[in-house]
Image (cartoon, rainbow, N blue to C red; front, side):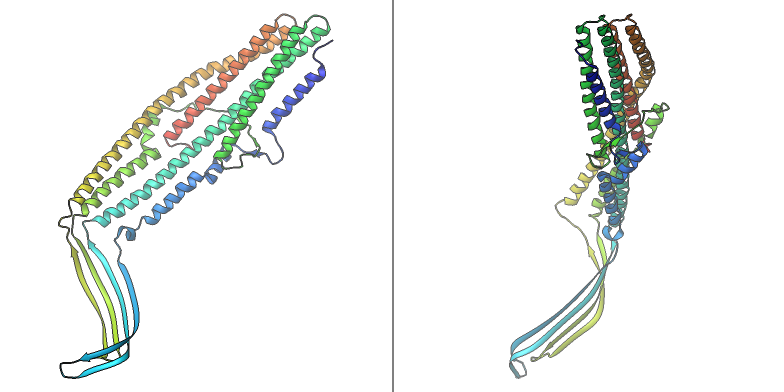
Amino acid sequence: MNPISNKTIKTVILLLLVSVEALSQQAGDTLRFTLNEAIAIALKNSYEIQVAKNNVDISTILNNYGIAGGLPIITGALSNTEQVTDVNQELNTGVKISRRGATGNNTQANLSAGILLYNGQRVVSTKKRLAETQFQSTELLNAQVQNTIAQVMTSYYDVVRQLSYINTIQTSIEASQKRLEILQVRKSAGMANNADLFQAQIDLNTLTQTLMDQQMVAAVAKTELLRLLTLDAKAPLAIRDTIMVDQTLQLDAILDRITVNADVKAADHQIRINELLVRETAALRYPTVRLNTAYNYSRNQTGAGLTLLNQVVGPNAGIAIGIPIYNGSIFKRQKQVAEINTNNAQIQKDVLVRDYASGTVKMYQTYVSSLQQLATQKENYDLSRQLLDLTLQRFQLIQATIIDVREAQRSFEDAGYRMINLNFAAKSAEIELKRISNTLQ
């Protein structure tokens, strides 16, 4: 009796086909988009980009002469007081005034204005610092955009990689299925034993389990991509694409563009900000000159007493000068700290440039090595595919053993995995190199 029925085989194949189809085509609401569409969705939905945009808006609002202290300050005040008092006065003329419950009213109004005339150029330095902060926030936004694009591209091609693994496993499953069918025919003719049949079924089941594992990995990769796009993590997603690597990148050109990297430019702005803070701190040791003017109205009326009505109306103006003489060397020490912070900012920029340059060289080495191996590996993949087809034909003609078929399958799977990994490694390196050179689009 045949230990493995045709019905069982057909059931296994049906389950595999349904399972694989579910990865790429779900219901009518399945999400389908290209890489450019995925990037557009990410740029629109990214919370990190929204925060960076809000920071740009904040720095733009604060970049104002009023915040820097260079605009006039105008204030107004108004008060009105009603009072009831007991008056008991004795004047030097001998007149005595005594009254209980005398009413009174006191009204005060004031409109004052003041403007800073000089404070050691502190206002100018502060305004320039606010402008530099705005420029820096813009560069940080650009850096976040580049990072988001790079993350989406890497995640997108990771999904393509995982689906490519599935295609390789599928091809191997088809070979195992064909081997099983050949053995069934031989078994029915009395030319194969149960051991070979059992082994063929075990190999098929193992590949089926491998396919299920890979489907799970692909599903996780899709979920990560949906997270980056800020979409429903449970939404079905279908991607049909291939990994195409740009082979025109040059190391010297990328190294030359490190200076225009958004992170490096933001570090440049931080140096400038700290330099302006040094100027602001130094200006604290200079005199401060302010022009003040006001228009006052005062009316004081009482029901008893020597002065029944006193009303004063009129403007006034003056110049106020404040000269810092000694405050325990606080300003001096603050300036010293600001200078150290400026030096630290320069060092941090140098470290950033150093790390980017080193990372660029290492990533370019990975990029070149992957491309060099990829050409050979593609040839190996094509040869292993042809070898698998040829071995199956020879196996059908009883010119190859079951071990020959398994070795051909293993060679095909290994060649497929290596080719896919090399392709993904080259693409990942390309994405990172373009991110560093600020050329991702």
